Structures are given as C-alpha cells and as structure tokens.
Length: 597
Image (cartoon, rainbow, N blue to C red; front, side, top):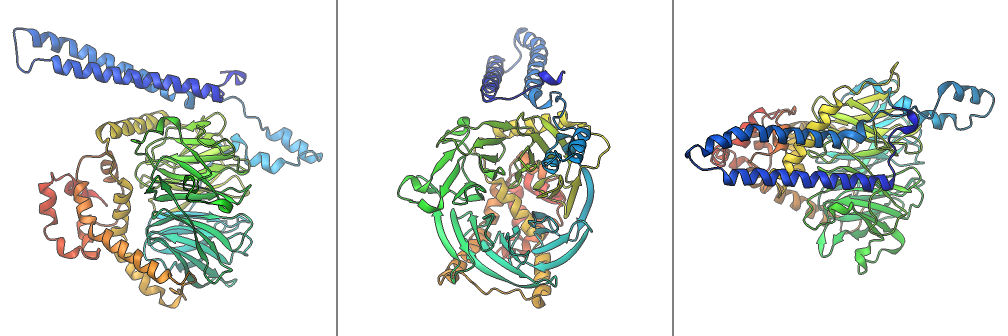
C-alpha cells in the first residue's frame, strides 16, 4: 500500500466505522435469531423424514454462519492491521540538521518516532520482589525507578545498573497499589497507597535508607491511585473505592482534606483511578465503577449542584443505565488536551478534554483484553504520540494515537497479565510489570522493526472471549474482587514474615491525618473484617463457568487456595466444610482451585 493512501482515521471516519460496527452487530443479532428459529422449528424426536432434511441443511447453514463470522472478524480487525505508510521521522536528515544547528527538537522527535517504537525489545529484568508488581514510577530525572508489590515492599532501583538501591517495608497491611516520587522533593519523599485504604508517605534519606513511613489519610476501601500535581513537592490527591477524593498537603498539621464524594444521583461511585491535568492543576479527572469520566475543578466543587462535576464524558453506546463497564485507568496527555480511558472488558477511548460536557470520544483503540485485573493505560512519547496498554493475554499493545493502528505487540508477562506500563520521562524506553514478580525494561535496540507475528490470532481470541463473556454473563459479578482475593491469600504468609523483618526499618503508624483519622482507620479495619467474613459466600457464589476463571486457572499462583484459606481471619473455622459445600455448588470452583497456582 502506498504511504500516501494509508488509512487515516478522522472523526468523520470514526463515525463511519461506527456505522459499520452497528451493521456487524445487526448481522450478529440476525444470525442468532436464525439459529434460535431453527432450534425452535427442529422436531424434538424423529419423524417421517423431516429430521433428516434438517440434518442435511444444518451443516451447510453452520458453515455459512462460520464464514460470515470470519468475514465479520476480518472486517473488525481491518483498520488496526492495515499496512502503515513511511514514518515521518528520518534518522539521517535529522542528524544532518542537528549538526548544522537546525535540530533544536531532535531529542523530542527521536523519542516520538514510530521507527524506535517498532524496535522496542526486552533489555533486562529487575528481580527482587516476591509478589505481583502493581506499580512503577520513574523519578522526574529518570535515574531511579520505584516499584511496589503484593509483598508489601517498595524498592528503589538504579535501573541503568540493574540494581536495587533501597528496599523497605511500606508500612501497609495489604497489597501496595501505587508508589510515586513527589516532584521537586529531591527524590526524598515517596507517596504510597494500598488495598488497606491507607495513604502513606515515606521519607527517604540521601544515604539510601528509609527514615520512616507515616499515614496521612485513610480511605474506607481500597485506594488504587494517587495523582501528583506536576510542580508541587508537598501536595497530591488520592482516590478510593469508598468514592472519596482526598486532597493532601504535607505542610499542614492535618494533611488530608475531603474534596468530594463521587456520586451518580444518590449512589456512590467507587473509584479506581485519578489524574491531575498537567496544564491546569486545578482540574482532575476520576474514573471507577461506572462508565463516566468525571472532571472536577478543585476551586469550585459544589456537591449540591450536579454532584460537583464540571464535565462528564462517556462513549455514546455506553450511556445506557444497564451498562456494566468500569473505568480501570485514565490519564491526561502531556499538554492536558486529551483524556485516555481504559474500560473493563471494553476498548480504550480518547476524549478531548476541552470539549463540552457530555461529548463523545474522538478515537478508539482495540484488540487487547481488559478483564481480570485493574489494568493500566498510558501515553508514550514526549508529545503523547502513542497509546500503550497491557492485556489479559500477557502482551503489550502500542497504537499510533492518531490513526489507531497497532504499531507494536510484545510478550510482556509469562504469568498472563500485564498491568503496569511506565514510560521513561525523557528516553524512548518503557518499564512494565504484571503477575510476574519482576520488572521488565524495554528499549529500542532492535536491528529491525518487530514482526507482529501472531497478532491477528491473539486479537481474534481476545475478541471471541470478550463476546462469549458478554453473552453468557449479562449480570457480571466483580471479577476484580475475586482476583484480588486470590492474590491476597497467596501472599498472606509472606506478608506476615515481612512484617516481622520490618521492625528495625523505622516504619511507623504515626499519623499526620486529621483528629478523626483514628476513627477512620478503625472504620477501615471494620470494613475489611466485614469483607473477610463475606469472602466465603462470595467465593461460593462465583462457582460457575466464567472465562475469567478459566483463564485465571492457568496463572501462576503460589499456593492452593484451600490451603491458604486458613490464613484469612475469621475463616479458619469454616474451612473444614468448604470442599463439601463447593462440590454441592457444582464443583467447578473446586476444580479450578486445585490448579490455581
């Protein structure tokens, strides 16, 4: 295909492709209707030759349906897999321009060049954690990388030398979900959040040790994400599953201030993600247990007026109140003009943050699978030229932002799920992590562009699994909670031993939060005790065929579920009769538990 005629996606073209997808959905409904009518018309028993004629027709009809399905799948894949035109950046002319003083944007253009993205390959593995690595963050200069894990440890890496410079206990009591360097702090302050709902701050010394960690806020549910203010060494935001957004200012005696409780009508919306607009730090966006991206202005949050929301964005086809989709991650582009949101068991959508309230998306990125975990998404490149996401299939996907073409496809996790993707702040490199216990570093050192072998088959498999999931289970239950439960039980013993080792590291539960923070912490503890007591009922309710369970059964867990149940508070006395009860429920979950390692 000539470069001048390669596929280019505009808003008009996107709407046309949406019309084509609507046609595909209509054809699928027609095929399902024909199939149901044939089943209804088919006699229940043998008659005078009528059943034989039906049997003669069925193979032809099934073959025709399979052919139609394959054609629909090829049409669905078409745009993402079309050949790309020649890249705009050329290495030799750019080097020549730099030598004569004209290449003032040389580094920026190199780091955003498609040719380098297509040459990304695995450079190194950083191995020290003993649990799934849930968070990665480079310091502003890009010389250090922080990682946090289910093992409750936070490690600071000198990634260039492939060594850990600091390894300390976070002070958290459950899975560490995020750890971030505060900007302009000299890499001496690290903010952290975790499944226990605590927001903690670690003070790091120049001698590569952790002075202490202190709790500055307490959510009444898990806290998945923190949002940094680009120029502030002492202020940041946190969001939790209790629907609360805290503004935290470390200069105050009581650092935590409740900014807003996110609601849809009168219903609270638990939050998975939050991000501050880098171009206007008064604005922040949140996403969670519904389909809406909500934007707030810290200066004028009035919960009595539109629940304090400045703007809401949502793909038009997800506006239905029956939608069960969640937003697992969202990020602003480098200049704050665009918002990228990844939806659970849906696609990734790009919104223009400057559009008015209720505006539809501008671009869509598909091919991956986001079902099993709270999966991340990010921009890649100094000017947000690319979109990068992990997938339940264990691969890393990279799309050209403007055309939505897939430009890179890498195997990122042997355990099967890639969750975290952290671009280097100045170089064309990438750090990733997932169910594996290591951190992977990627750099554009390949001699030739990566061959996208097997991409088509993997995308088809992801699409079929997602479609089957939606058809079989219209009332989705919380697969993410199940996933976190398994990870929690897997590392229970490790966490206890780690806490014993942490005695001399200076970690403390001293609180900088408000006077009622102890009450909040008690409430958080009660919340988790209540959740633990209901885990058994939830697990039994989940004992039914489900693609997520089938996929999860192939993942590498550290122990058999039933053996680790004894470690969960308030459940040991119920363990003895558990297997019998599960068998009465149909036995599927028992079968999966034996191979869940």
